[in-house]
Image (cartoon, rainbow, N blue to C red; front, side, top):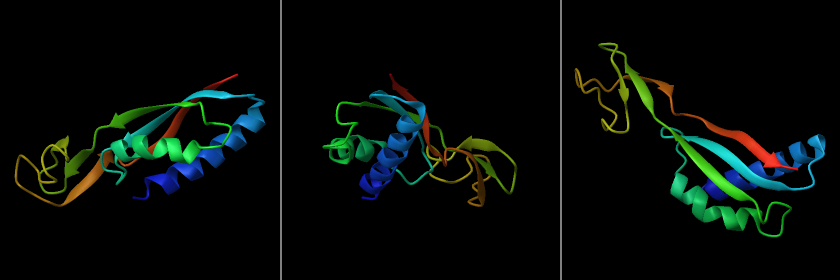
Length: 113
C-alpha cells in the first residue's frame, strides 16, 4: 500500500504551500484521483488519519474527487471508460490503449485561513 507514502509526501507539500501563503491552519484539502493512477481512493481515506497524525493537518478534512479513466483505442479510435470496460475496447476488443484522463493524482484545492 503506497498510499500512505503518497499522503505523507503531500502533507509535506501542503505544509510548504501553507507557510508560503501564510495560512495558520488548513481546514480541508481536495485531491483528484484518477481511476488509472494506480492509487486506490479507499486506501487514501483509510491511511489519511495516520498520514496527518501529530501534524498541523491533524484536524484537516480530506475530500476526494475520482477522475474517470478515459482511454482511446489505438486500433479503432473509440474513447471509453477503460475501467468499466476492463481495459478492452468495447467496440473492437483492442487492448492497445492510450490514456486520455484518469492518470492524475493532484492537490486540487487547499482551504484554510
